[in-house]
Length: 342
Image (cartoon, rainbow, N blue to C red; front, side):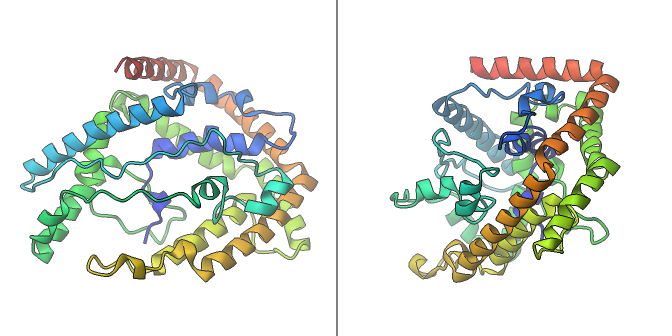
């Protein structure tokens, strides 16, 4: 079964790799910073980092309303009833949340921030909002089992099984994601990530990052890190990123093993995997592993060396694709300006 991450759009995966990941990498006193990235100014052109959480929430809600209206339109064309639903949208502010995976005190408390993190701690103790009932639930229950399956596949698309010959998650494609995928694409069609004009460039960016991960310089750096981890009793990793990924893989497995809640079951009887003894034990494993990982990153100056390798590769990529990247940046800035006017 594909993981949750495998359903993310390619654009989000690239942005995460090129910007968000750099933020984590650069913390901890290294000489290089995320803003030094030659590619970041192009890839983040359509994202308003200065918008307040309140403004971000307003835009997200407006976008969701449009997307739901288009989803209803699409479902109607396919012969199904669908009522726009935004009742369970929720937003959490991260303004006061510190994410410091290169600080030992932070890692001792949260590990990689997978099982537990400052955001989840912030939410603990707060009275959970009562979920709003999905207006489509009654209609779905009126359908036969075969009709309900057809409804779900029309709405969300048929989830593809991962290719056993290929490593990594299944790539999310809006064309395969049913009416919701189509609606999402329509709402964000003015973003350069979604434009057919820039698809060749986006594909090259994706391949560029994939190829860079297998470069000889990073392999040498990962080799030094892996040797350090072996000395610390963790000999099962070849690349630094595999250590953190092992925790997320274990989390996914715990959620996959959990049977979904029966609609007719008493909600209080449902055992959330997040509160299970197995998850608590995984959190302990995570913190121990993350501390060893951090020690080995420090010993090998991993983060700074990694960014030097990445930035050098990005400089060449920018030089080879300057004209298209400039056009991509202009398109992103234009889309952002239009969004702000709405």
